[in-house]
Image (cartoon, rainbow, N blue to C red; front, side, top):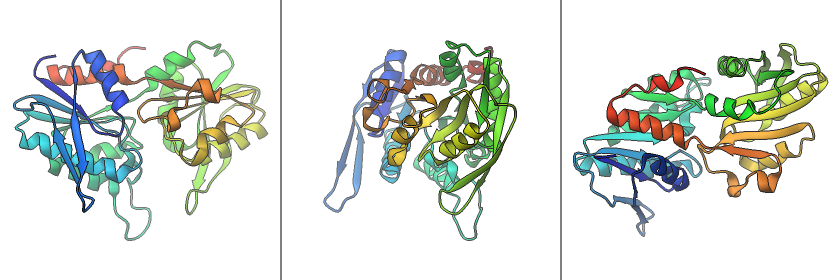
Length: 317
């Protein structure tokens, strides 16, 4: 592709390299160094002048380090006279800070969006934001992709005649319903209540799941407490088997092992929006399958560069 420059921060260079393979364009080097006073310095080591610049950086742990790195990449590209700067954030971690549910707390999702704009971002390409309102936090165009097609393609290899898609809560029910339509199966949802800290309770499951194979779909899995709580309810209701699917497989604090150890969990499926902890895969967990969203991101970047419709990516089955 002509007049395009793709750079990756240190958060997920493997994904950026795979995107560039699909675009048939090189991944340009970035030098990240640290001064004696612990301040970061970022240098984009390729020409940006009057080029369409794409900066690939999911906000994963350490989130604050990677965020500052991304802000500096934006500033460096702007200072190098880039024609347009598109921030490719496959996982926007601050999307969870999307509402003021307690006194005197900050809306981190909106604040970080403002910081990206102030640093020079002209456009954002994101994948499966935690909630729809996060899209509105940005004062620049946002192309919001989802991974439902990739997940659905994976599950179509199974016999789905006795399958139900289950959302852990009503907030994710719309996405679960869209996923169920792609698979041609019914949908159910848990009634979840979140308490102080990370503790959650699911009092019931709305929908018919008894004797059925279920696919639990969530946007992300961090500690896995919600999914494990839902598994307790599903067992009580007599489901036959469970598969767990999400876009962002963060699997913090040993969540992947806890889920893999559940005897009725047949498979755990996520995408590579974030690096899998320890590089784990099906080979060494027995249950984890990681799907690539690099082709979808690459096609979206190509369409953005050429001025074509990105929403057309979601048309059809």
